[in-house]
Each structure stands twice: as C-alpha cells, then as structure tokens.
Image 1 (cartoon, rainbow, N blue to C red):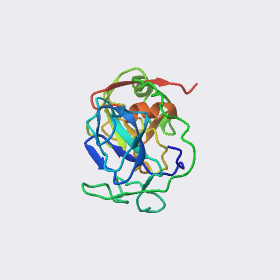
Image 2: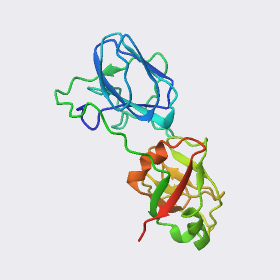
Image 3: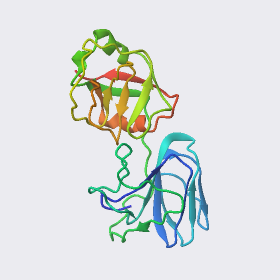
Image 4: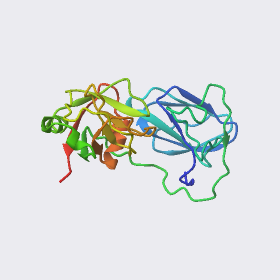
Length: 238
C-alpha cells in the first residue's frame, strides 16, 4: 500500500463486509478464499485493487489458512488507545469492530506502491524452535516428545495463543513460577501438559514455564493453521 508501518489494517477470519463511500486502493493478504466485490472488479488475495465509490467488498470463510488482512491505502483511522489502534483480547482495550461501524480512511501517503502482486510464502507444518528459558523444568522425555511427536491445533485458541493437543509434556519442577516477560512464539505449558504457542495478544507468563520458543519465520504458519491441523517441531538450538 505504500503506507507507514504503523498504518492500521483489519484482521478477520471471514464474514467481513465493507462498503467504501469513496474510491479506495485496497489489498487482501493472509488466508486464501473468495472475495466478493459489488460495483467493482473481481479481485483476489495478494494483489492491489482500485475500487470505485460505493463498492462493497465481502470476505467469505477462508478456503485455506485462518486469517485475512485487509489493507487500504492511507490506513484505517481508528482511535489510538495507549498508542495502539489494535483491540487487546485480554485487557479489552480498544473497541473491536462491530456491524454498522463507520471507519475513516487516512490521507493518501503520496508514496509509490512498489508491488502490484505479492507472492504468498508457503506455509509449513514443520515448525522450528529453540530451547526456552525454563527448558530445565521439564523431563528429557518431554523435550524429545515435543520435537518428535505431532501436535494438533485446538479450536479453542485465539489471538492470545494457539492451543495444541498431543502427548503430555511432563515437568520436573512443579512449583509455581513468578511472572516473567514473554516474546511472541513462546511455548508455555500449563499444568495439563498441553502446550500453548503465544501469539500477538499474549500476556506475561502467569506462572506457566516456557519450554521453547518458535522461530519468527515459522510464526505465520502457526497463525494461519486451522483447527485440526497437525504440526511437528524441530529443535534448532544447536
């Protein structure tokens, strides 16, 4: 879009309809699925499209992947809360979008659009990771299990974390842990032994140890993985 990196986009798992009251330059990336456009030309994902005033864009449920990202040249102008335009799932900060909302579009940045068609990177089911800061709280068998056995994406996950189901990861240390900072991609293990990959809205640890951290390049594959998808993890700690 040629926007500043801080420009807001809309994330959706489908079922979003938007009407543009003024001409707009838009792009949809992320998941792959059907994009319906009324009063405008048909469009697909990963391309830049010019829509006339009155055009209506609808994103159906994804056929591949989990989350779409809708961008508009100039960015969506919603109020900032603590410096962010995002809705925080846990804290409830920033209003989530609701049916009937009117959202302003920012001024044209007057910068060149350098790409008309993006190349979608392949999504991997083999996820690379390194040992986490509390790796030693787990048995040797737990690490072997995590890096050799498949784990399945649970339907109960959200933007806070992707919950996984699979073999139980046993702990050596069963004491509580003081809260620590987290990075996106940290794999926490609650008392039930089922790992959670922390995503964009993650909090601090909350008492659960971090056994591993997912490589940044593989995070998009987890974000786009649908419930029921099986993942395997490979140790790249060296």
